[in-house]
Length: 226
Image (cartoon, rainbow, N blue to C red):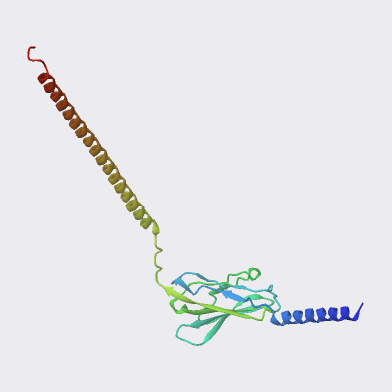
């Protein structure tokens, strides 16, 4: 092999090694924690607080780190209410506020870290955060939602009535327009018939007058001795 070919080969190898090193250092940066902005809960019911995440890497139970925290609306202090343990999985952390009302309701194999809160109370209002670390992903995922507790939920809007009213009004308008078109056509037809009759009568009169004039001319043209 010539020295020129060896130099080219060495250059390609160095470039490949540099790209591989750059890729390994950059890692994957697609970590994203997905949650709604807010959840409304009816006082005394059980509510699901959803949290899922996306990552370039499959979850490794020995390296995975995850926890849920709660922050009261008028308080800056965060309280950890659940965490992931590499041997025991998701563990609710007992607290004076929640007791044993917080349960894990997700599926780690599907990147679902959702929880449920039973017997929701007004005092449970606040900010709930879902924090995820999934090595070797270098991005630490974080998101949160606001939980609002109400005494009664607003009834969902029923669009059936609105659709029915709209359809009725539209149908009535369509019938009205159709009726107007039919009436207009009938009037136009009657007008054409009337014009035709008047024209025929006029032509009849003209024809009768013409016959009469012919008769008078014929009478005057006869010889006197007849």
